[in-house]
Every structure is written in structure tokens, then in C-alpha cells.
Length: 144
Image 1 (cartoon, one colour):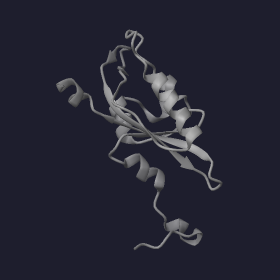
Image 2 (cartoon, one colour; image 1 turned 135 degrees about the horizontal axis):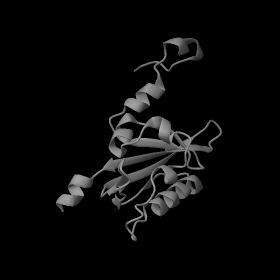
Image 3 (cartoon, one colour; image 1 turned 45 degrees about the vertical axis):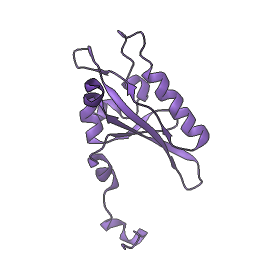
Image 4 (tube, one colour; image 1 turned 60 degrees about the vertical axis):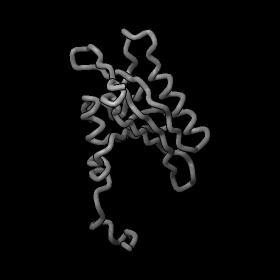
């Protein structure tokens, strides 16, 4: 078992930002006001976004609904889930959700995601941010 990192060891501690950004899974972190505070490289690659274009912005503005799909409800589902996580302080695992991604030319590509939202607590037990995981399951959904 490894020993916990102490303040004296901080100069030798791992770079947790770099570790998070390098995770192979697709995660983005938002604060309770839905502002993006972190994203994995995998998430950014899957959504064709640049880190500097998403940090500090409302996730619902970064990833809008497809305006050409009158049934699109991804932003509503995401907003409600984040609100539930903040209110209940519990993870919220959602069913597969269609949430099309905007392409550089302004068109949208049909995409499906398996989303989850989980709270992160500060030292006082308050929700300080929400980890949003979104596994791209488009290939599976389109096969079905």
C-alpha cells in the first residue's frame, strides 16, 4: 500500500491535472453553475472541441442541442441531471441519450452517449463540482 502524500512531499507529488486529462475515458468537470472547469483529452477528441474553447463556459452553451432536430432534448436532460446531483448529492446515471455533436462546418452529426453525473465534495462536504462522464455508444446504437 502506498503512503498518502503529505505537504512535505508535494514537490514530488504527481500532477493530478495531467493525470485527469490523460484518462482514457470521456469526462468533463463542471461547477454547480455548469461552467466547465476540466476535460479529459479523450472527451475533447470525441466531441471535437479544444480545451481553451470550453473552459469557463456553460456546458449547455458549449454543447447545444441540434437546432435541426425538433425532438432534441440533450441540454434539458443534462441540466436536470446536474441539478439533481447538486440537490441530492448523489450520482445520477442516465439512460443512453441522443445528443448530436456540432461539426466545424456548423452541421450536426448523430451521436449517442451513456451519460452519468457524479458529485465531488470539498472539505466541508459541499458539492464543489460535478464529474460528467459520457461514453460514446454511437456505433452500438446505430447497429441496433
